Image 1: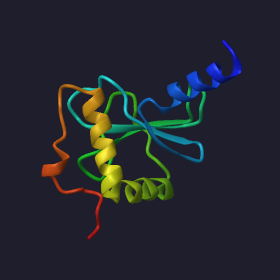
Image 2: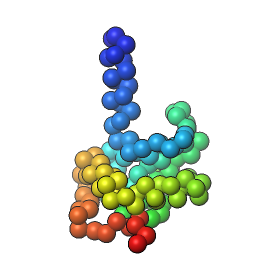
Image 3: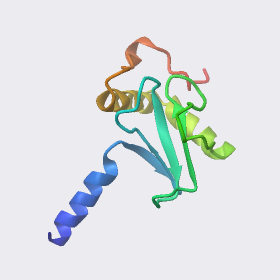
Length: 118
Protein backbone atom coordinates (compact mmCIF):
# COMPACT_ATOMS: atom_id res chain seq x y z
CA UNK A 1 0.00 0.00 0.00
CA UNK A 2 1.49 3.34 -1.00
CA UNK A 3 1.23 6.54 1.10
CA UNK A 4 -1.87 7.88 -0.69
CA UNK A 5 -3.74 4.57 -0.35
CA UNK A 6 -2.88 4.48 3.35
CA UNK A 7 -4.14 8.04 3.91
CA UNK A 8 -7.32 7.32 1.88
CA UNK A 9 -8.03 4.15 3.90
CA UNK A 10 -7.53 6.00 7.19
CA UNK A 11 -9.78 8.86 6.11
CA UNK A 12 -12.49 6.47 4.94
CA UNK A 13 -12.38 4.54 8.21
CA UNK A 14 -12.44 7.74 10.26
CA UNK A 15 -15.48 9.20 8.54
CA UNK A 16 -17.79 6.19 8.76
CA UNK A 17 -20.47 7.05 11.30
CA UNK A 18 -18.54 10.00 12.75
CA UNK A 19 -20.72 13.10 12.96
CA UNK A 20 -18.09 15.46 14.34
CA UNK A 21 -15.17 15.89 16.71
CA UNK A 22 -14.66 18.50 19.40
CA UNK A 23 -11.25 18.58 21.07
CA UNK A 24 -10.70 15.04 22.38
CA UNK A 25 -14.39 14.10 21.95
CA UNK A 26 -15.80 12.06 19.10
CA UNK A 27 -19.55 11.89 18.36
CA UNK A 28 -20.68 8.98 16.20
CA UNK A 29 -23.47 6.59 15.23
CA UNK A 30 -22.87 2.84 15.62
CA UNK A 31 -24.61 -0.07 13.91
CA UNK A 32 -26.80 -1.96 14.77
CA UNK A 33 -27.95 -0.25 17.93
CA UNK A 34 -31.47 -1.22 18.98
CA UNK A 35 -34.63 0.83 19.19
CA UNK A 36 -33.59 4.08 20.95
CA UNK A 37 -31.98 6.52 18.49
CA UNK A 38 -28.77 7.84 20.03
CA UNK A 39 -25.28 9.16 19.37
CA UNK A 40 -22.24 7.68 21.06
CA UNK A 41 -19.56 9.96 22.44
CA UNK A 42 -16.08 9.11 23.58
CA UNK A 43 -13.24 11.14 25.01
CA UNK A 44 -9.80 9.96 24.02
CA UNK A 45 -8.71 7.92 21.06
CA UNK A 46 -7.52 4.76 22.75
CA UNK A 47 -9.37 1.44 22.91
CA UNK A 48 -10.29 2.34 26.51
CA UNK A 49 -11.59 5.93 26.32
CA UNK A 50 -11.70 8.17 29.39
CA UNK A 51 -15.43 8.80 28.86
CA UNK A 52 -18.02 6.84 26.91
CA UNK A 53 -21.75 7.54 26.84
CA UNK A 54 -24.82 8.06 24.68
CA UNK A 55 -26.89 11.12 23.83
CA UNK A 56 -30.48 10.84 22.64
CA UNK A 57 -31.39 12.09 19.19
CA UNK A 58 -35.13 12.56 19.79
CA UNK A 59 -34.83 14.46 23.07
CA UNK A 60 -32.29 16.65 24.79
CA UNK A 61 -30.56 14.32 27.23
CA UNK A 62 -28.71 11.07 27.73
CA UNK A 63 -29.81 7.67 26.42
CA UNK A 64 -29.52 4.62 28.64
CA UNK A 65 -27.47 2.12 26.67
CA UNK A 66 -25.72 -0.69 28.52
CA UNK A 67 -22.22 0.12 29.71
CA UNK A 68 -22.17 3.57 28.08
CA UNK A 69 -23.17 5.63 31.11
CA UNK A 70 -20.75 8.56 31.30
CA UNK A 71 -21.93 12.16 31.01
CA UNK A 72 -20.24 15.02 29.25
CA UNK A 73 -18.88 18.11 31.00
CA UNK A 74 -21.56 20.81 30.97
CA UNK A 75 -19.84 23.00 28.34
CA UNK A 76 -19.33 20.07 25.95
CA UNK A 77 -22.98 18.99 26.42
CA UNK A 78 -24.11 22.55 25.66
CA UNK A 79 -21.97 22.61 22.52
CA UNK A 80 -23.45 19.28 21.39
CA UNK A 81 -26.99 20.64 21.93
CA UNK A 82 -26.09 23.81 20.03
CA UNK A 83 -24.70 21.73 17.15
CA UNK A 84 -27.85 19.58 17.08
CA UNK A 85 -30.10 22.66 17.13
CA UNK A 86 -29.04 23.37 13.55
CA UNK A 87 -31.65 21.69 11.33
CA UNK A 88 -29.03 20.43 8.86
CA UNK A 89 -27.03 18.80 11.67
CA UNK A 90 -30.16 17.28 13.22
CA UNK A 91 -31.12 15.90 9.81
CA UNK A 92 -27.59 14.50 9.33
CA UNK A 93 -27.78 12.69 12.69
CA UNK A 94 -31.20 11.26 11.81
CA UNK A 95 -30.04 10.15 8.36
CA UNK A 96 -26.92 8.49 9.81
CA UNK A 97 -29.10 6.69 12.35
CA UNK A 98 -31.52 5.53 9.64
CA UNK A 99 -28.67 4.34 7.40
CA UNK A 100 -26.99 2.33 10.15
CA UNK A 101 -29.99 1.00 12.12
CA UNK A 102 -33.03 -0.85 10.83
CA UNK A 103 -35.21 -1.39 13.93
CA UNK A 104 -36.28 2.22 14.54
CA UNK A 105 -36.34 4.78 11.74
CA UNK A 106 -36.57 8.51 12.41
CA UNK A 107 -39.00 10.47 10.23
CA UNK A 108 -37.23 13.77 10.86
CA UNK A 109 -39.42 15.68 8.41
CA UNK A 110 -42.44 14.90 10.62
CA UNK A 111 -40.97 15.90 13.99
CA UNK A 112 -39.77 19.09 15.60
CA UNK A 113 -36.05 19.40 16.29
CA UNK A 114 -35.95 18.91 20.10
CA UNK A 115 -32.68 20.85 20.38
CA UNK A 116 -34.08 24.11 19.02
CA UNK A 117 -34.70 26.68 21.73
CA UNK A 118 -37.06 28.94 19.78
